Image (cartoon, rainbow, N blue to C red):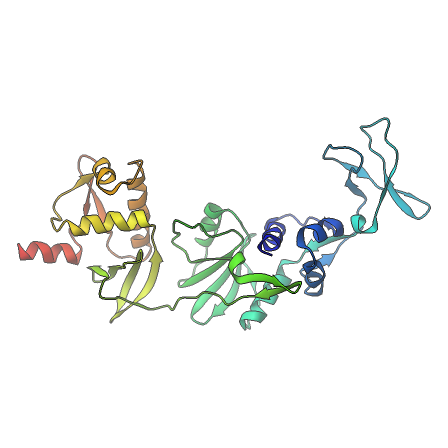
Length: 318
């Protein structure tokens, strides 16, 4: 059934108000088609006057011809073609009603506020516990991250139409529509959202890099301390975790390393990935206005930021 959700996502991602035939929708969405009509996520549109040619392999449209109460097409590119009957499901068309989908999601999540369209692709859905929930009607990861940056609130969750990568991170907490909506008994079903608590606590095996920065064992950064908890939590890729952990484990924080040296020691290839991962880490730090974890040195080298508390403690013990 995940394939049906993928097909639905593809329809939602189209910005233009296009019409889709009943025949195509039933093929792609299966028996969930009727439920989407009941939810008004699919709304009837005008009867098609042009349909895909049924008489040749070329992907083109032909005008619908009415004769004696029936409908036909005739391929204009084939001199030998005859008229071909068109069925009513091929003429019936529907449009995607995005506000109805958002209303259904909000009702299922017990969010009382009405979804508000901020841009062509970004909808503010309201508060879910202590989180601001948004829907991004895009399926490309880079475009989704760019759209998420337009939200002017903190502590956000974003539902998007793509599939979360198995490896990697974004500086935004993205929830794939694949993970929150399923089709069961031919009906859309809203699954429980995997929401993490706002405040996170550091554990014994976690590393305190600074007062406001903790590196966890499972490749997360806890940021901005409030007593013994942290207000923000960001996932980083394993490569980024290994770079920070290596520089921390050296216990000689005055030694800087070239990207090629870090690449060789950590088995991260190609070595040009190293600056990219460091940039990703520091972008998170800049976002929450905490110290950058890794800073550049002369001769294209990298070093753990000497201003971090962990570095100052090590130096004071020498």
